[in-house]
Length: 136
Image 1 (tube, helix red, strand yellow):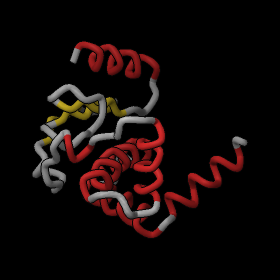
Image 2 (cartoon, one colour):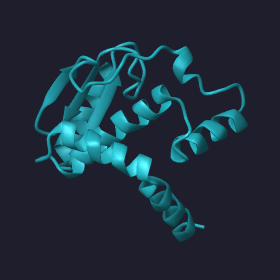
Image 3 (cartoon, rainbow, N blue to C red):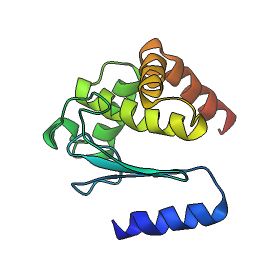
């Protein structure tokens, strides 16, 4: 929590648009395992999982595997839209709040729909492939 305050203060001083997310059970992301806080330049809000409409996950639902190769398979499965619902929902939730940083006028529900649509349509994968091509 203290680190979140430090990031929040630093970003506010820089004039940069930002979101610092922190799950109340200790994750430095929106894990959907517990309530979470999102601090942006103009507001800080505590979210229950019901507010953005996601089901609660367990730590086991989000296990990243035992090896880097396991984690890579999960990463690829999310982009291929073959990951578990819990894995996809966590990516969608985090992506939605990132979209809201860029488009603060959008309600979080619209950002969730945009993130879900991008993932399920394959647009997110296409964008990632373009990013890799440009940075290889």
